[in-house]
Each structure stands twice: as structure tokens, then as C-alpha cells.
Length: 281
Image 1: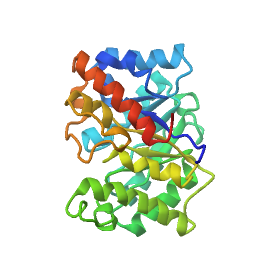
Image 2 (image 1 turned 180 degrees about the vertical axis):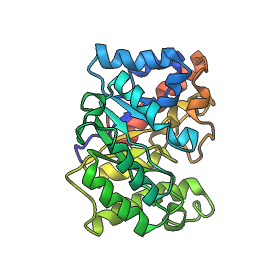
Image 3 (image 1 turned 60 degrees about the vertical axis):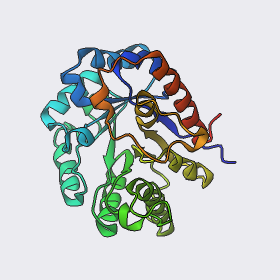
Image 4 (image 1 turned 90 degrees about the horizontal axis):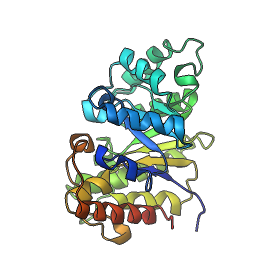
């Protein structure tokens, strides 16, 4: 079995952020919540100043539909000084994402890593088809410190494996679609083995064992609130399989949720099983 380790962060409600340090390898913060929830921001600031736990700052595009406003984003990056941050991108738009990257670099005073006291820049691959996605991948992997690949490209709906259970099931298609996309990048010699990769979100938790079993060793991290939202919704993972469906609620909409004791038990179990899916003991 491969000894590779994929680190994981599960976004969690404010009421259990302190507890989340027990199941998270790093902090994953959504920047738009900094403006509305001071205690949320202060938790991540404390992680940066008082612990060795890395913090990744997200531009909140999944929650907002577009990247957080760049000028305000710059201010929060400077204020938090995260270890990593996701550069503004444009959903499923390769040329728009490349342009957004170039515009963002104008905020870097020396053209390297000036923002956030040398925080590493994560670039997200975007596009609607293979050519757009690979062109964007090549650009991002040339310039970013870290390459991110999302879980829900519409492209996956055409390339995901069709089975008796996946037919018409976007979750199954997204799950196998990202696996196939990464596999094809490797087969075509496009995959950059010299760059770390981050997987944004997930449709089905079972997806991730594939990367460990195939020793795609530079997939370094993943973020997903899946086991947290499932626990809040009263759903228990089926051991190391997870679930074959996904609650539609975004964690950001549950950020003020007061997690009950029974929900916390499910969250504890689900996060342990997620580690098992990652082939971690």
C-alpha cells in the first residue's frame, strides 16, 4: 500500500471550530465570512499566530458564484497572512481565469510572493472542455505554487464513467470524472509531478482512495465539508465508503449552526471514516 498522505480540512460551523482542530490537518477559511463573522476570522488568525497549523484562505467562489472582490481580498490576505491562498478565478472559464491570474499579479509589488508575507499562491484550473481545461492547467502549473482541481466541472458529466448506478447521477459522474481527468493528464504527459495539487471539494467521499491506491503522490490536500454537513443532517457514513448521495446544503449556510451532541457524534465518526477512505489509520 502507498505511504502517501493526503491532508484534509473539513469546513465546520463556528460552534465547533475549536473541536475541528482534532480532525483537521490544516485550517480552511472562506474569506467572505470574515466580513460577517468576527469570531470566525479570529479563530483563523489565532491558528496563524499561536499554532503551527497551516491556514488556506479560499476566495469563496463556490459560495458566491464569483471570486471575492479582489481589492478587499488583498486586505484580508495582508491581515491574516495565510500559508496559502486561492487566487481569484472564474468558474468554468479558462481565458477568464488566466486573465484573472494576470490581473492579480499586479497586486504583488515585486511580482513574486509579496502578498501575505510570502503566502503560497494556489491557482485553480477552469474550463468547459478538455482543450480549455488543459490549456488552463498548463498555464496555472507554470505560474502557481500549488494547482487546484475542482470536483464539479460540467466536463465530468460527459467523461465520468457510466454505470447502472451513475446514469443520470451527477455525483457519480463528478466522482469518476475527476479521477479520469487526472488519469488522462498523467497519460498525456501533462500532469506536473513537480507541483503539489489540491482537490477542491467532493461529490462522493469514496473518490479519494483512488489517488492513494494509484500513488498520485503529489496530490497533497483536499477540502470538503461533506462529513460535517452529513453529520448535521443526521447522516452516518457507511464505514469507509461514505455516502452514495450528498446533502445539498453548503457549510457556509450552516456557519452559525449550534452543533448538538448527537450531531457531533456523527461528525466524529464521519471524519474518522473519511481518514479511512484516504487510507489513513
